[in-house]
Image (cartoon, rainbow, N blue to C red):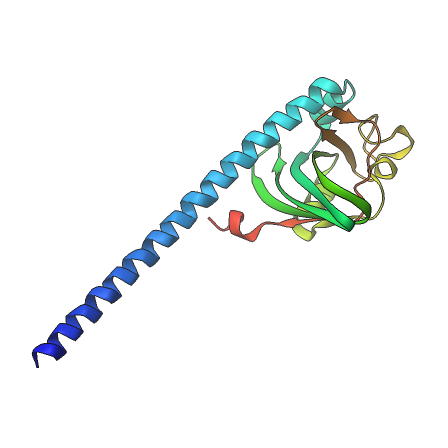
Length: 192
């Protein structure tokens, strides 16, 4: 009988400890998500500011834009093939509403290494912005094609409702290839 009571007490303590750990895990998940959002927000502001500084034509477009999105990406290449993934945020300017997103780049080619870069989108109208955020978007052409004859980052006008800027550690790129890159909502960062 003593053994049974001791076993029941041990089980009850084990269940209580498990429940306590599960509660802390949910609490920690919420804290981790909050920290991830804050990190993305800091990166987005820094890179948007950089585009506005380095491209004189970006500022008037930004002032007219319905919203913008900024992504941080690391592209990996190991032998044949490569790709990258990253996180970012899309912001509706009028309301300040933020939607956290993910990106995945596919690539084919030879090489070994990693390249970090950022992509900044300015959206000229609500329809283009909502389509990007709500439905996701896949870049099926190079950024220079999306930006028209001016090249990526030239930013004279919104082409197909958006202007695209690519930043590397060397600064704003005049031409860049974002072909095969998909953008979609980040369920984990938007649920809290």
